[in-house]
Length: 194
Image (cartoon, rainbow, N blue to C red; front, side, top):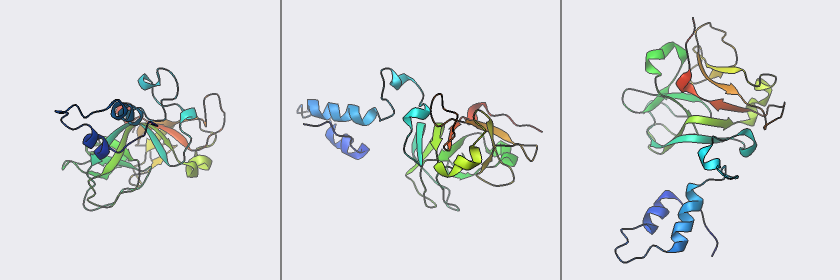
């Protein structure tokens, strides 16, 4: 039988309490191919971060994700935009001028309605959005700043003089000089400037 990637709920159903020994070897193989996603294409990739070559599908994120996250009731989330976890534990507006509010930043891995409880948020890793290719071209390796003038957006220039570094522009692939709209999101080491 072919190994099959399954949803979280399907895996939980397969892995019941097992009092009758009902978990089969196939169930375990299905769990493995689900847990080890397609970016793990080479030996030891499980221990490495995603690289540009292994993210080929547009409008995709790869890396450390938070699942089943709550969206604030007064807004919706859009793919690729930067959001912050507010004091109520919901994802909301982020911008550099609200620095005390932006201790925990993330990027929406899809679009979600207000008050959704199923949001997937990228905490650290790669984003591929081909619509950014023109905007990011010629800036490989340059920092990306959380913009203070426009909520939930970022800029490749520190135009307002007070922004937070949240990542850097990536090439299309290792060794490439092209930019196809890929960037690495890493807000943990971000700094503010005045």
